[in-house]
Length: 90
Length: 192
Image (cartoon, rainbow over all chains, first blue to last red; front, side):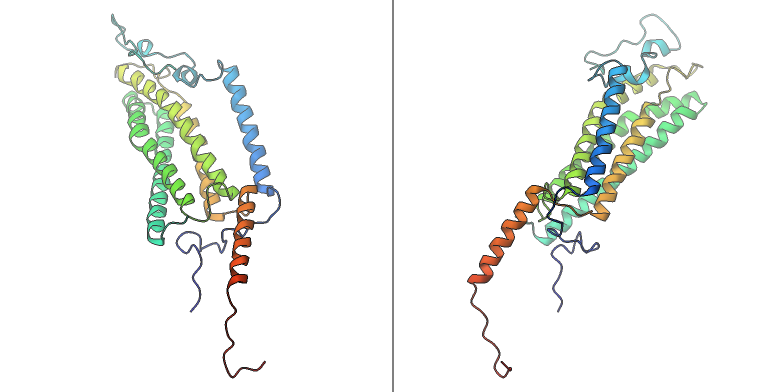
């Protein structure tokens, strides 16, 4: 009877077993992935800085400050929408 | 420490279900984002931005957290470990980063829902309501999740230094046990 693989329920389809990796440094795909991730992080950081400073991931960023609930209230009546206390602005 | 096969299979099933559901929820958000940008019907646009908020808080976030939790249990309950193989580690980082961004973005979805709720149906100006932001986030989120799925399927080789050290320790222990075990007696009748 053939011995069952160590992880037949989850990883048997690839034939790769835990501990089967090389004993060298990080493989190429990790380096490529890391470089791409670093570039994306830098790009996002630049966009955040240009768009109003880091940490500002609130609605003002995404709407460009053009919209507010009161500005799109069609009636424009007195006492337009007031953001609730502790609203969405960080 | 490794979990029993039955428990491992259950956790794996939960992980796959939550992860697939997460991808599906992001796909729905992506579709809503497209409709919100392209529809000429004010009611539809309002409905889209109203629906995004509960979809995010009631579906997207719970599934994402469930995927993270089950993934953690799955990795720590098997010999794959969390930080032994690069593909597991990268998946974990992707999962955490995506959830952090999602948590930050929930306030934007709430804000957009507020705007949509306050916009009257007769309002002809939809430009103030439309936002490309949900679509952009959905596309980027989908890309990250597809990378995670690809890593899960292909399981590219590569062990971290910690994984290599652990593997070396295990092999040393295994070799010591083999050496300590007395050799089996040869069956009678065999040629020497």
